[in-house]
Image 1: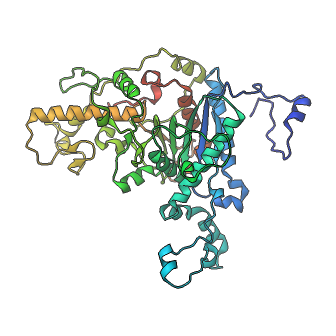
Image 2: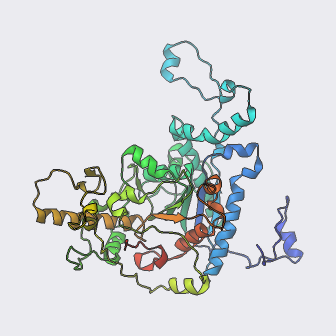
Image 3: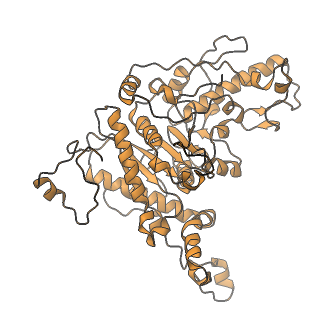
Length: 479
């Protein structure tokens, strides 16, 4: 850390007590768990098998870089508590797919004797460097999509629980919050686990390191925020033909969202009352439904040059997503003064009414370009029949239905993320950057992004509630 008096040298056998006795000290003093109010666990994606051959690809090094960036952004916010603690979940090293029995129990009982074989047995000896890279990096994806998926989910959940138990054992009485960052395939795994997660997590097995296999399939702690980076989750939701819907863990939070949400306006521009829809119309309150994630806020960070990343706003409702401006992550020009105003507890949300309604975007009599539907499909998962479909409903009933659907979708979006949107975009930086050159580094460059670090640090540090969201992260309608 430049200017902090710490040399950038990693030394084996480092003795902290000897360093203190020799005059060394932490630049911000010793941090205690009482001052840390947030723990961030990071789930890696593909390629960590390669670290057995090339140590520089170790995910832990990337997290160390990201931790420093988060600490820097946190320091600029001038907050009283210390930065969130960021710990990696290195799940791949706990799985060995070699010599898994490829035969079923039925074939073993009724057929001839079979002998298991491994990936090394079927891999030719030619072009070993290329084959090793493919097997260590790309094969993580088919492994997850195959019958090995339960083993992958178990490995991630068990490692996350192990890290959390160690944290609680070393910091007894800690009452902070936990968030998760998932990168690439790790984001897909995190969504899969949190979709299965019950609304109330099972009790923490803090007495010993061993627990039952069933318990390790679930996280033993509630998750506040889920950050997705370079994530193909949108594609997996499309494959499963499901929408992203909120987990209604607390009806009190849903009531607060409806009360503080920017108001809707009717077709005449009049303010409409807050949504009074039933919780069942907004989301569900149980695990086991893919796409219904047991978290308070979901953030999907997309580098514009990352070919692996997909959007999530349209997975809530594609028509409503088109009415929102694209949220571009930027650093404040004056972080200290800017953030000191943003983190005022009594700051109220800006009134950003939706003056460009979905119906107006889809229909305008005077503009033939808008006379046709935006989407060719005649059905939306959340809205039912759309423009172009045959319907015998009278116009007044259709207006009331559209207004109700829009209130539901808008409430859903705020229940999924209190900022009113899920997608946040990162652009290539630098005078020589362009989207095609950045393809080579975009997918792995999130850990070196100050903008991403700022988003995680700011959102983990703010108080819950729409009224405490930051202006720059709030959803804004298109002009």
